Length: 383
Image (tube, rainbow, N blue to C red; front, side, top):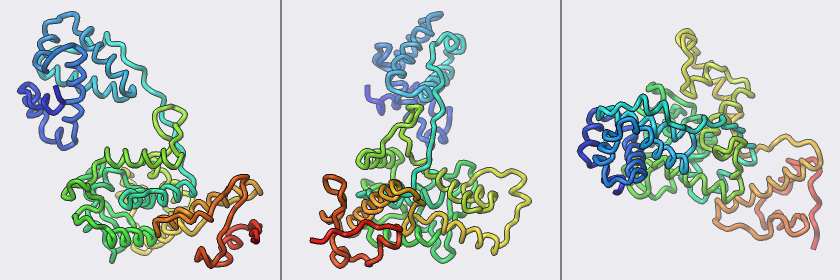
């Protein structure tokens, strides 16, 4: 039976009514439908009602029934997800007066997974991700996450009216924050310019900053954003797995860590930074009362520290300079593509590692663009 059909069964509707509208609002009913579908299929049943009867009639063998579900879940999901689905199924069974506590103690559950090992992306990787995206919506989403430190759900639920270009702040609604508190995040100049450009060229009319293209009255779904981002990682060759094997080294949440790292390096006041990121700073937040001038100084630091374009990584050795030059040329090619839709074939590396240029006039670049950023630029080949 289809997952959507399972939600229509009376025993499921009774449970959803019991847990309340918040359960559905947080989209947990989809997870419930998923685990019930797996349970029904794993036990060879035709419906959820039949699965409940099988659990009731097994008596001391309930753990055998549940183990079938666990084994099926382990084939598809990480240990963390398996534990969540088993908890959800247990809650559903407990509601229907099926005692699962003793059976759960006998289950062979997967060991808790190794903690994910994150790393923040380099500046050149950040530039490649933004310029390499073919979607203006995804391009802005990546830049906004990097330069505001917002969580993905907070960013996807931004309305255009939340962007205050006059006050230079972005207002995050309390309805979508982790703590349920509203907050303001500074709108730095580079991000402001990107948002204005995006809104000018956007063809979809919607109150949402990142609307669903299929239904503009709703925001973009997290699953769609994640799928699009993963495709971008694979296309750019940035889809390396982290050492734990749980996911990619670069993912949406690591942009929040990039944001914090850049501001820590720049010496931004820690309590201001925590407030911008929507973290709980406890009693310190009650006694910490920065003035407007204080916030202005910290915002100026942030604007420089979070700038993505127009600055380059610190390189020292000749090999590092060569690699940095390769990344810089690739960034230029992507910038040209983002603006014109076409990549000049004369810009890039050809067989043997030689760098092939158009002349400055053909590229429309200032004559000293390479000399300004590298102490010993490669000499142009005449011809």
